[in-house]
Length: 200
Image 1 (tube, rainbow, N blue to C red):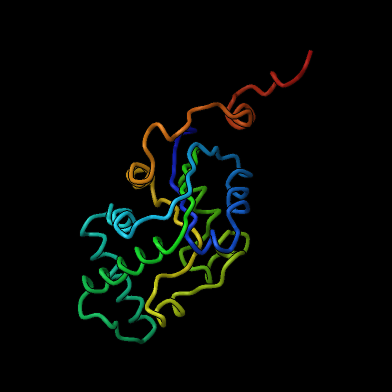
Image 2: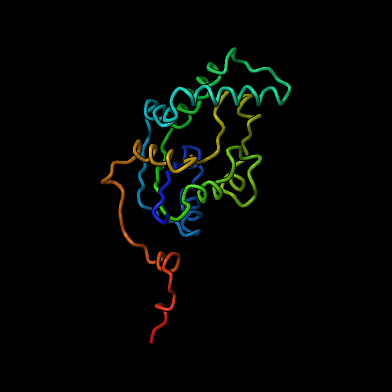
């Protein structure tokens, strides 16, 4: 389990807000190991590829969820079908992710995927817990994003599960861009016997 990997992307708003160091610090502090990092400006095609790893089902699913969210607020979706709604979300997300430089990272460690998601916070910054990255450093909401017909600006992408992480990492990194090494912290975090740390 200590070799579980997850993808994190600091989105253009996180880069422009000078939060790269703070975000990295949050993940390092919990004991995760950085094994890959790069800065780039994604093409719209690359951004679409990233969101489309879930296939056509993803478009239908996010479109349906968005339509249900409109209904809960007593509003009618501006799109005729979940498919149209999903396509609009895909285009908005791709536009957002390709709007400027991003920092793509691969983090490794026990329970890396759920740990990163816990530290990152919920998708909507407004309802994210205080103490999470999104809860502490940004203020966007679904209401503001829907009003402007844009993607929610939430600083970071974090993989949803280990299978998704594996697919996403392959989009952003080649195998030779990921470093295999033992971090000194791993002895404290994972080794069974701590007695070896006592000098005799």
